[in-house]
Image (cartoon, rainbow, N blue to C red; front, top):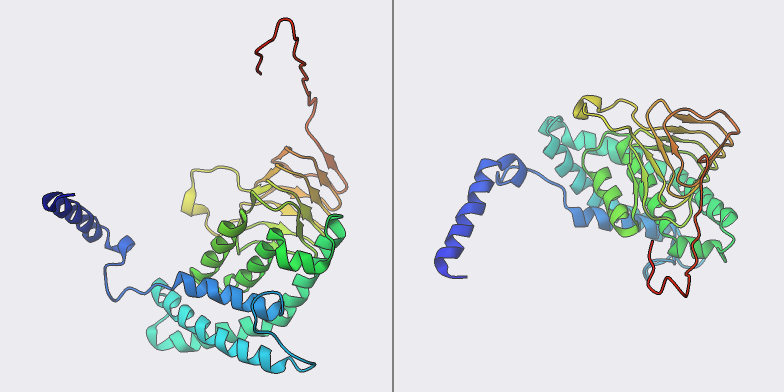
Length: 304
């Protein structure tokens, strides 16, 4: 491009900056967390939760305490920096109260990690029990995208319930981009959760999922479309899935008042917008498969 063309483009983009400062963060005093640092925190926590799978730094011998302690100190230091930026970004905590709030969040978060790890081990067991193709639990931890998405969700959820801004969303979208599984950090998900063939799964913010639930690829646990937008923030918009429910591929279960009762099975491609009693079997009615075979004499070139 020539100099005049470049100057015009620069002027146009700079004009957009100045007209929408709240979006473009041109104010040097505006704070924003570091996306890469947050993703690194996720991966560092994964190394602590499941050592020897990811990276070279692992506990040795029968005394892993040093590895755990040193790792958590490093993670806390990184998390504290990002929490400060996130809290300053939202602006609802006075600056002189930021450090106290960061202390509170970190204390609660790190105290929860042993329990989060225990729950993750139930998710590993659910995957192993639910997938005959799984040759070992190690294979699940190391390679299953669904388990990675659940891992990130369980970490992000611990920050979400403490009303931490931005960081839980950044974590969730990191997993979403890596796996195609979109679990909002606000969802409540019980133990022994398994996503089989995990891709294209959507679990909305106010979804409640019980224990021993299994979902397949393409499942949506979503909200009914509404024009209310932000007026519905904080309102239950997504379904409740009770214990021991299986939802097969490409099924959609929608709406905040929709409850799928314990032990129910939702067939593939079903569209559910009302509650389902305990022990139900939900399927599409009058499904038809039409099979055509080519007629060699008349259909030399044939198509659907």
